[in-house]
Amino acid sequence: MRRSHMTTQDAPTVISDLVVRMTTGFNPHDPELAHDGVPQQVYRELRDKCPVQWSDQYGGFWVATRHEDIDRVSKDAANFASALGILIPDPSDFATEDERKERFDSGKGMLPIVMYDPPAHTPMRRKLEPLFSPAMVRKREDFIRSVADDFIDDVIESGQCDLMVDFCAPVPAVVVLDWLGLPVEGWKAYSDTVLKQFAEPSEYGPDVGSLDIAGLYAALVDRKEHPRDDIITAITQIEIDDEPINDFEMLSLLGQMIFAGLDTTTNAVSSTLVELHRRPEVRKELSAAANDDRLWTSAIEEFLRYTCPIQGFKRTAREPAEVGGQAIAAGDRVLMMFASGNFDEREFDRPDEIDLRRTTNRHLTFGRGIHRCLGSHLARLEMKVMVQQILQRMPDYVIDESQLKVHEDISVAFGYDAVPAHFTPGRRRASSQ
Image (cartoon, rainbow, N blue to C red):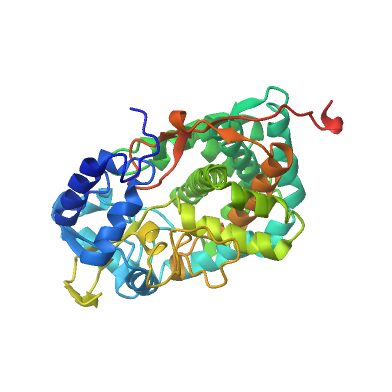
């Protein structure tokens, strides 16, 4: 089913019915949410009328939609745990009471590091952070720009392309695979697998096991025997309390880096290009400031706030707590809707507008607290470079909104399957002739 742009005026009955349904039993998998422009209308109603709402779906859980409440839960890792999974529903929901207790006590959920809590989370995070530091990321800028230009060269003479398929998906795939130390020639297989898992996730979310596990394991074995200057080698050398992490943890970390690196940036950039198409005055302002680093820095933060690919993650309360004036019992699950918090009028002035010069921008796109996105610096740089190259080389691109296709299920991530565009044909770079 093709899901294109919808406004309240286009479909007031559909939106009204959906809002009623969502305010009585929020379901992140509801297919009616998967329309361009619809999620924010629903989130606004929830923020105003029921900011911490109980849903009886999937065994029951709380939905937090205001910025302040999401920020508080995100930062309170001591009481709001990730070890019992981060999705609604989640495979961890089937854990026995003994398994739940063991995961709570050890801090070790099914997958490192996203489902690890202290004490297990802390030393592993400490080992990984230097690999994604701003200094490490800055070294990649020229490579990212070259990759972006390579894929633009493939379509620039034709005057038309699918920005999602031909640009937004392949560029992050090549960048991430190269950084990890995997063959970039295999970018399409990885990209297709990851994007399909997010566009059409199972009820329990994207499955890291859908990747080429045998190939990833072979790469890990190779780096143990023949170390290189890459992320895979660094993963094989992680030790916690003087003991190397096990093969499952290594595979899980590598798989998560592929999933996070290939999907979220792809969706953020494609959504940004769609919004720039819809706002010619914003595109004009940004294009005219190609060398204004300060403006570009604030602009990328604003597009991250506005597009927010990841809709939300879950936490489980260890002890009784209160969120937004609502009593939360021990064992209750709380779904934090980051995409809603990013549009909270209590936190942001004119949140429905894109303000390239927004000075206070505490967006939730990368999460908060100990689970803040490890790859945030890389994502920012990729977004900046990719948008810059499109504006420079396809300055008049026009998107066919009638053919925009939104993911069928946005429970994990909002994004497009197709972003068809046309533009004035240009020339390939002289160096690529």
